[in-house]
Length: 554
Image (cartoon, rainbow, N blue to C red; front, side, top):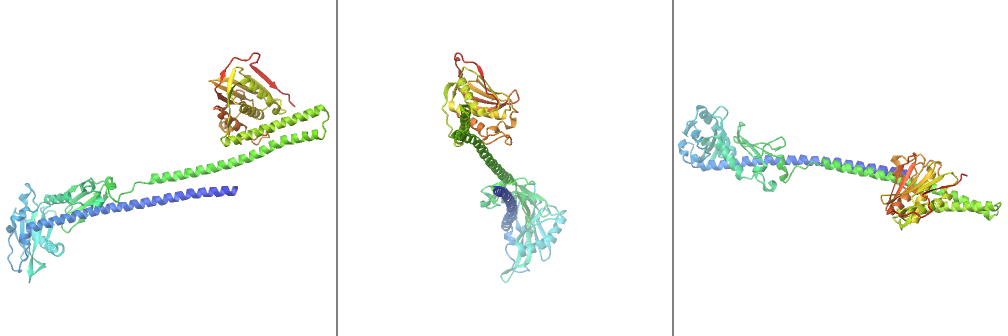
């Protein structure tokens, strides 16, 4: 039994440990999933930024090609061809990135002969610093654009040089023997406009172009999913749209093209759940709850096992106690039976005493067997009673008289305080077993003081009380005494099986009543039974309201 107990305890401990390990692994998996999802969300923001840069650049290339292509789009046949002046761009260049009524006065077109560095302009007169930037920087930017990114490009004026001005230009190459020589540009044609024009172009791209694939965005518009901040290469903000950026947003890497705009995109945390790859919810409460549930179940299993062990011990004690209780009366019966059989009784009085002892011990055995049978029926939910109306006082008095031979040799006085007019609804045989058990319990544990049997009517219930003058039952044990096989003082020399009060409770409950333990005024225990369906009837003539039964001490 001990090895089995140790095995079960180890098994329960391993179960709890395994549950904890699984919880830790689940938490790690959740964190890994969270990191992966956050990385995916930041990648989505990066993709959105690059999509905007690419789409804006394509839009700018188309607009520049449409406006500047008439002059810059046709290659020169010879490096010695004449270069048209800036006025040749009109009127097509007027539609390229207009600033609006307030800003168009500062727009102008330009042409740079890359052979001589000569600059011609049309429209607003540029400041000297801006002219110097066009002559010194655009040639270098133009060659890089032609060699790397295409025929059209943009360049932003540096700080202090008409800050914020942007040049959109196209390069006129030279054709040799039918081939355009991209590494030998001839001239540059373009328009210098305001940053607001670039901002309007970007706004139009945002409004028309889905920055996230439809399968990712779930059909929602970009304006609700992606926050955008567009700046020029110097960091001056040109455009901002979408949800506000905060500490919880998932910010992607900035995207830019050479000499053009810089885009920074982010996904707010509150819209992340609308995307295909989303941030997982925080599972820590669920994991902790699962672990707590597992721990609780383990504790319950351990307590249940402990209870089973206690029940096994109680049954073993019960078997030992019952064996002792059976052996004592059987020994007496066998002894006096053999005395009568062998004719060793010395006279009629001795024979009568032997017969009395045999009958008394047989009744004790019968009472014990009845208790065991009642408990067995109770465990199988087979307790059956047949209550019928009957005067309670005569029935209780008869039970006391039948109990007298079982009381043993102790000089115990049983007092009765019975309401002679009380009519109760009870099963006579079950009531006999109930009262016998209560009186037997009171005599065993009530010391040498009196035991009182009382019957009264209260709230249409027959209230039966058995009160002793012993040490009483502690308040913490008053519910436990009704459990089977339980003896509060099992180490005493007082014989007992521990099932008497359990049988009482089952029979009382079968009557639809209730039972409880109270403290008696004398300090002892008072066991109270209440049987429903009682009433008072006129008492029978000549019957006393109370009586007293006594038997001498040995």
